[in-house]
Length: 437
Image (cartoon, rainbow, N blue to C red; front, side, top):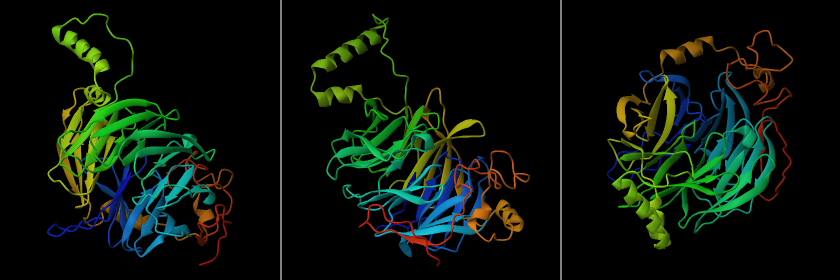
């Protein structure tokens, strides 16, 4: 989940952040600025710890971290066609890849790394960065809208299948085959996202009034939620909670909507026990005789909870995370702030703002400690990753030296040379030639 902050219109303060994104399991926040990028840990409400910061690359407009590991992907406006992959704790560049046009978005899990251009999508094997597939015949996608399941065993990819309607293409990133197309909305798509297991896919159109949830890989509609009726909005972000019980949507308005995915069941009482229950049953029966648009509107569920922002019109992203054993709503905005709200998982209602953090303050004590303890640069990237059979004495079983991803899940033992790689759209399977800088 990532947002690139747009240029401020006349009369409005320019955005402090050029981009911001939560990592796959919502335990970290990455921000990009004109001077570089920063990574923050989201383990505490009261304290925002800066994990890493770099000013080596200016004008960063894409920064994505792989879970809580040391792997980070960065793209800068100075070289918008080049993707840089770093191991930030070791201070090394793993590789940099050049593409035929500007990079619009990047998605990654422990199995795949996707690079989305306006008219093509590149699928890499994240363990060795080998290019596996290039999707060339896709409709023009000027915003780089795409989604990747964070479950690497279930690496589904979703992207728009039409420029004029809300069709979604579901693609299997493991078998490298198309699964199905989903007619999600009448209007063009604005947001798509998978839940943590990759079994559900949510979408919203540019109108921003209706949010739908589909089963994966079948593509059957499971839920339909109404965000509002009075006005069309621009959906900024759409995200499931890690347990898939809630779905959160933020927009260019001052309200964040949280929907609850109730357990699907066909069992209903034969006779309503109250007058209101009787009327509800009558209304449900009446929808069978109404026009489809009217009956759909009556069957749509409203927000379970809401979060009120003290601003509107700013680019923002939201997520739902468990921090210090309690469910929280987190909203990051382009003005450089992180807002943390309490969420009542039982009764919903209005979320309570409990903390506001500035994302532009100077480095923390944690960052200074990290710099003091940083080891000397290794001769190659292969020396920076944990090896299943070698140097196990100094590592915790199952984890890399930096305590991040499971050993062997991100980068295998074999040698991974460093250097730029240039890919050309004219060849669907270009050779992965690695040249020295």
